[in-house]
Figure 1 (cartoon, rainbow, N blue to C red):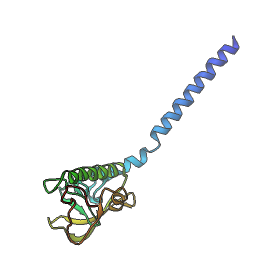
Figure 2 (figure 1 turned 120 degrees about the vertical axis):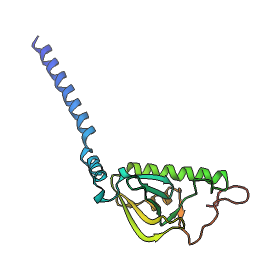
Figure 3 (figure 1 turned 60 degrees about the vertical axis):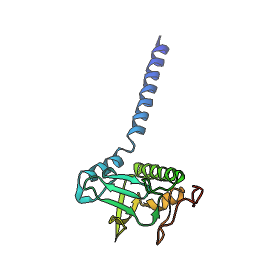
Figure 4 (figure 1 turned 180 degrees about the vertical axis):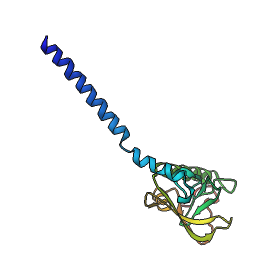
Length: 163
């Protein structure tokens, strides 16, 4: 009888340790996740991951004040009626999805203004996600190209992308 009772106690102890381990893993990053929430509720700290929305591959918007920012160092295919071919629209959707994924995974977002505006009057900025430049991350994924002094077409005469 004593052996059976010892086995039951050992099984319960093992189950408790497994449960404790699972809770520890699930809660391991709670302090890091709480930090952006604190920033989101204090506009004096500037934009955060929770207050920014990806508009397209090279534009983000502060949902608190409605200001749209354009990334200074990249150009992504236009996601609206400005697209001249189906390939360009597909490339725009891919760039938007890539930017959303990168911003969505970030814990800290920093916007650094250049002091200049784009042709639509949007502030040109550099965006940093956890210390890494968003524009460079998008270029590394092939979702954007370096910004150029003047706009260049995305599609050739056949409707294929010019990357």
